[in-house]
Length: 154
Image 1 (cartoon, helix red, strand yellow):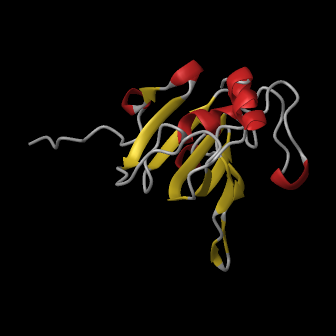
Image 2 (spheres, helix red, strand yellow):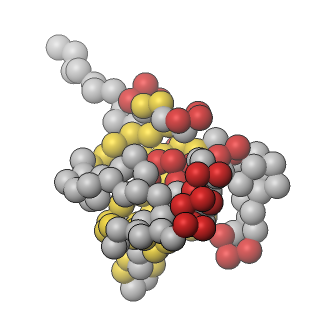
């Protein structure tokens, strides 16, 4: 008698196509609203380089450390993070978790990144496990901010 072996939970076929080459897999459905551009949010994340950890990917950065999770807080959709993160997080619900595969043109591009993030070579694909943990206060933009948002679409 043969045994049925289910496909790997994170096989490439399981990923959905997001905007501009971004790929994602919802690993936990959210329960709340989606953020809007400019809204402050908190995220829990781990970044891998080259692939997922079960396939040999190297952990580069994480909000999780020895003392627990320290969520990363920023205003979404206003270029404070790599474009792939902005695009993905604007489509997520509060409480939702995803695996993201971000192509280099939505990540750090040809130049890569160093510094506190660690060495990310140019043209690197980024692999993020991310949870949108909390939505902050709804933004109230002044005229200058509204104009900037209109002139700088994602």
